[in-house]
Image (cartoon, rainbow, N blue to C red):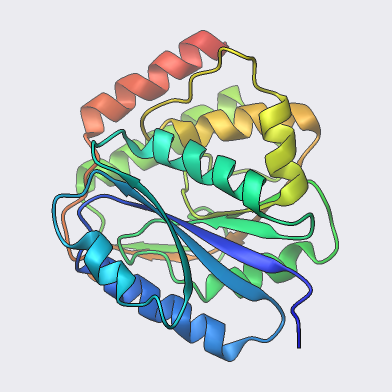
Length: 248
């Protein structure tokens, strides 16, 4: 039976040879336990020097995999922008895009809850939030926790947005209309943010299009992460401050 729509899962990957196998196994489990939609996976290889791509390709006969393979590291923001662009070009009108981390800290089973949250709504974004009842954060480095809390307080004061508490979570669902509207908001000379601040940039662009934001709670547990965080906390803080300064 042909599925009515497809959920595309976008994975930015940089030296995730161990985690990517766990992530794809969990996506495969999701695929095998739902018949409501099809699943396709887009992997953005951000200049990995390990076996990330090799390990991902071992799932070729189990999942529909698509690769954007870059030889040089370009940064998370460029990866996110590229995944959005690929989805825009290749997907159908009823399809949805999930962007999630490739380090095994985002549980693909939450996709079901995110998808059920919006039902038949259009022009929507669902954020897996660390700041909803039922959310938990475990085993996250102290500096990373401080940055997250500072961002939570600061961004909710400056950019108070209906439906959004977690401006920086990278685990989100976008429907096709929201993605199309994001690109309609861009100027011809637009350059995507290279780092983690791209998560905020997306919300700032999308809220101009009357997008409807929703959140669900989720548990972020860094114990499931096999490698150290690639975030440079000081550099990320400066990037957010720069974006806030420009937008304010």
